[in-house]
Length: 213
Image (cartoon, rainbow, N blue to C red; front, side, top):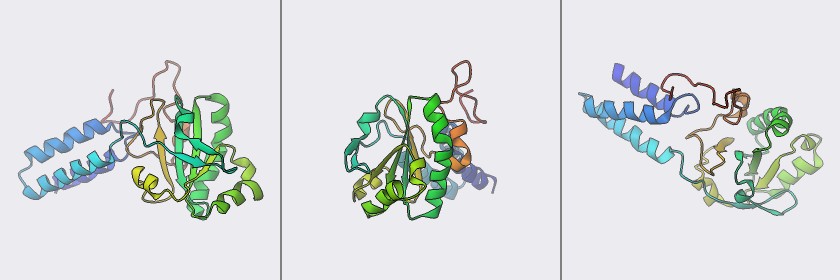
């Protein structure tokens, strides 16, 4: 029972990689897979390791070229060298729009203090007009002053980014790599302590146990 609880806890820790260093979580699951006396536990650990490999941050995220609200094509390469907080949303979904409102609350401060950070939202409603109406015809549209793009029916892109539900958030680092296996949503308070926010020594603040310190 203790091993099962440990495997469950390690699985949750891996998908909270903002708090826990994923490499150390993987090593602990590997140890359980090797040393457990129970075949079922070994199988569960092996399945977890396989899932971790599939969900691991990639060396380079997939590129895209998508239309903005004026139907001008925007590429991911245009944000090269910046942190990109990428969000996949549906404007018809109240949960998504709640997260968008939270992003809007922080955006002006982040844009003012961090010129190396870009917000990019990809709208995944099938109709382009839903994004256009939100940004151009609604009272709230003027608050959302970052880059908005339409997925343009590119379901392969959603598969490549492993977008299985909405909203989904992905942090891309200045090297063009996915920073975390799972990126926290704005409502978690992530934007208050994201990795582009450094302390006075220029070092990212400490995370909890299973971290690199």
